[in-house]
Amino acid sequence: MNTLASLYQPVEAVIADIIPETRDTTTYHFVFRDSQGEEFVFEPGQFNMLTVFGIGEAAISISSDPYRGDGFTHTIRHVGSVTKAVTRLEKGSVVGIRGPYGTGWPVDLLQGCNILVVAGGIGLAPLRPVLYLLGRERKAVGRVELLYGARTPRDLLFAAEYDHWRDKGIKVLLTVDEVPEGTIWEHSQGVVTGLFDRMKSTPENTIVLTCGPEIMMKFVAQGLAERGFSPEQIYVSLERRMECGVGKCGRCQIGPKFVCKDGPVFAYAELLSLPEEVL
Ligand SMILES: Cc1cc2nc3c(=O)[nH]c(=O)nc-3n(C[C@H](O)[C@H](O)[C@H](O)COP(=O)(O)OP(=O)(O)OC[C@H]3O[C@@H](n4cnc5c(N)ncnc54)[C@H](O)[C@@H]3O)c2cc1C
Ligand code: FES
Image (cartoon, rainbow, N blue to C red; front, side, top):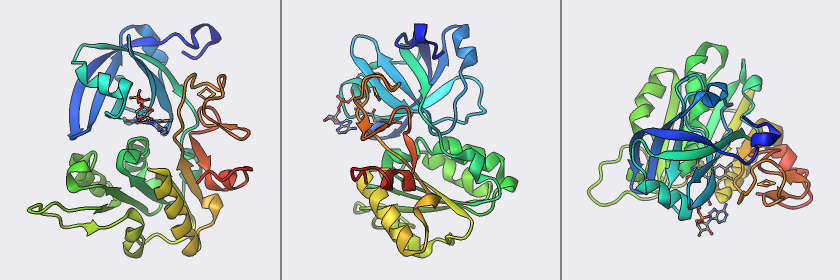
């Protein structure tokens, strides 16, 4: 799909299902309209450029199981022109898709390792394909822990799936910033780094995958460093404004790196070696 001839030409995909997640976020399942979609395979952590025709394009991570095989899923927080226009679409509506683009999570490195996943808000979306993969390949890896934080209990994404992930041997620890009066909440309250005191993960043979607001990832990296984790063990997914998505326009550039092409997933150690401070 990414030949030069078709670089900026989106392929049409149809909304096959719409799953409300929270008050501002919805998951959409897409299937391709024609056979071009048969070539579509993605790595966990990659993104597509999604076009709402007549409005514009936005970078959106793929949030589905990479082995699902009948299309792909995007989980979209409705914040701006494109992502709000998506709310006006229905089952059967057509969007444009370019992708998949960017680097994925380092899944080849995970074999035999313990894995700590730390997510905040919409940051769980690009990590969900890895959680599906880890659930499937559970015996090939060691301990798997997910620490996930959201604003309130109503803002947690994929809430119906946590028990399934637990059944697959993934320890899920949850926290929220606020618990509205009258809400029953049996988990933690406070920022996601507050869960570090409750996790079993240690630096030993562990790889950390994290995505969320940059301030969260900064404190995650700092908090883990205090616990003896090295920058080489930590992988982060960055978000920058994007236009081309393929390393041509320079919109997403950080020093010598293009977030769309060299990322969005970077080793934290690689970011520390850049001339400008990123997190
Ligand atoms: C690799 C990657 C993966 C992403 N995955 C997802 C995903 O899975 N789901 C999802 O909902 N979103 C995702 N995003 C974010 C999404 O691309 C942006 O929010 C995008 O701006 C939305 O487009 P829009 O036209 O709706 O918003 P716009 O109209 O462009 O802007 C909306 C508002 O948000 C502000 N804004 C948006 N993005 C940024 C930014 N990066 N930096 C500073 N201000 C910003 C704008 O100033 C404006 O106020 C991802 C971004 C990247 C780079
Ligand atoms: S979005 Fe154009 S270079 Fe990255």
